Amino acid sequence: MIDGKLSLVLPAHNEVENIDDVVKTAMRTLPRFSRDFEIIVVNDGSNDATEQVVQRLLEQVDGIRLVNHRENRGYGAALRSGFAASTGDWVMVMDSDRQFDIGDLVYLAPHTSEYDLVAGYRIQRNDPFHRTLFGKTFRLAMRALFGVQLYDIDCAFKLIRGDMLRALDLESNGAMISTELMARWVRAGGSWTQVGVHHYPRVAGEQSGGSFRVILRAMRDVPSLWWRLQRDPVAQTNEKPESVGSPGLSPTGAAAILGAIVAVMAAVAFKVLRYRR
Image (cartoon, rainbow, N blue to C red; front, side):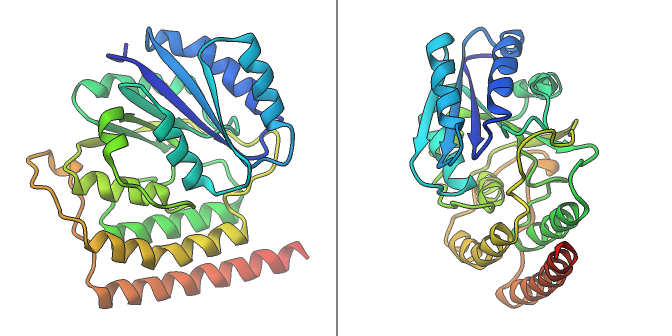
């Protein structure tokens, strides 16, 4: 069992075919891990019936809350709204696309007695080839630029101490939110570990995280986040080596790596778009 209240944050954009199943499965599963929990669905400007489905669930079941963005603000903005609305001693993040099994919380929960953040990594990623390639390139870039040592930086299956999470000054609205979270976490002296979780093919709805627009926005946000983080003080910590990231690169090294990453991603994106025509 997790010690204290648990808040599950579910960002959702056009997940009408998935959100009902995700929420109901969570309602059945979470009592195994916490005696007190809440489920926070953040509807990020969906233009389908995602909001209406959640509204019906609110009328049927206690313990569910809805945070509504009238316009699509981005994945990072949705997470930040969910974090701000959370009241739990622990906050869990999971996507609403049914590609994760909430039952895999069994692998994360035992580590909460020793670590402040437990990050899942996908044992085998079940996404289209181009999205997997972007993910691997992005992970290497974030490790080089920000010293983030996670195997799978963007895995949307994390368990985080609530008070420490809500104290972070997160600013990213897009895909850089996961990198910013971990970079600021390490700088604040937070401990962390990582464990493998299962990842399943999407069975309904459309992926948006690997779209060309999202990728371009992430690339644009990289230098902005890098410069912002240079102003942050780094906490002195005695945590285990696994819990401490490297300091990152100099501006010259960062610019060189970023240029190479942009070139690789642009080439891959061009091939993907050309193939789809």
